[in-house]
Length: 267
Length: 265
Image 1 (cartoon, helix red, strand yellow):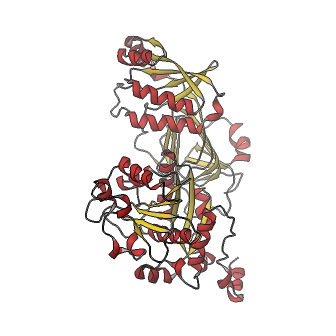
Image 2 (cartoon, rainbow over the protein chains, first blue to last red):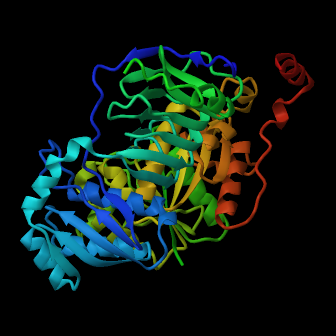
């Protein structure tokens, strides 16, 4: 792979860009407090997230992103229309407690959840379900979520999905996958599958210190790694060029691609 | 403080049970009171490797069904009085026990022993979940093969998700000559992927098969084989001693192979 001519690697078109699952737990900073956003229970999703998966996801988020918050930050739980009983609320509060966070307020549109939260001694704000319906109506033109910062080893079998950019400090092992609507940055070895711009955005980029993926996808374009692996790995950037996914050496990428007008004509 | 360690892997046939038997014996030789628990319900064979098959009267399931006391089910080793075995039931299926029962069983072993080694079945199914339920530490056994390492990686992820953070690695069946000829993954390659601390490297040794068939763990031999030394070293590392890793390359590194390597590079 030479620096001046980024080499194309074998590419094929994906039949259809798989949509990002809307169901995932998110943590969001919001003016000194932290919002814990739970995915809606009934959003027309074919597979609404079960409590167990939700619990695992939250655990993963909390163990992977401790740089985002100060200890003893206040957390507001946005449960939307998800039904939570007292035991589940307590489980969430305990998990947050382990990460030195304090659950203080619960936003919900379900009466039972509100009752459970009040009984457990949290402030409650009940939102009408109508407001939620209005929100989903404007969803199509949605902006990307704020970047997801992870500090961990992504092991085989783990899949990270995020409606925004994913930054991973650590390795992505073979068998893992990262699917992001934005860019994917791996400060480590990328050996699994990476899918940037998963909502169809061909401007997505995949960057890694050590680019050795099982497969790269950007929007609807797929690329396999070359049959003969390079002798030496260095930081590289994958992007969509005129004829599929191209890979450039990171230090030259700014010169060759960022200054030139983006090759977006084929969009 | 009793240490509860589960010995597990992603792929089957990598030598978990051999490791459990030899580590149990080696720790007992270091004057630790050890019990090895066979958590591979339905397919027991830890008793075979320890040569204790004909002395099993009750199994862990009999204890849970309150048909016998715990100390009746424990099989004491004659050669090494510090070592005991809690056998699994062979006649029942692997669903015969729940994670809660396993935790209860292991908790009742805490009092009499310094080490509880749990020999887990491979994979990610119910038997595996049972085996890890009570553990605080874990030893991952893998061979230097891509499929075994990949599955080990998956299992490490599951262990971490189950709050077992103390995970260490044994690379089993390494063939130093093949590694030198670039035909086998090296320990470094395995560690690059798994990124967990290394506890030991055990070379491939035909005597392992002899010792399993006889029911005499390698570490019992008068003159230890290389694999036997490796297991004894692992036991001492578990005890917190810092023991340098064996130089497995030494016997293969003659003048001829050096020239060959030079030629290739």
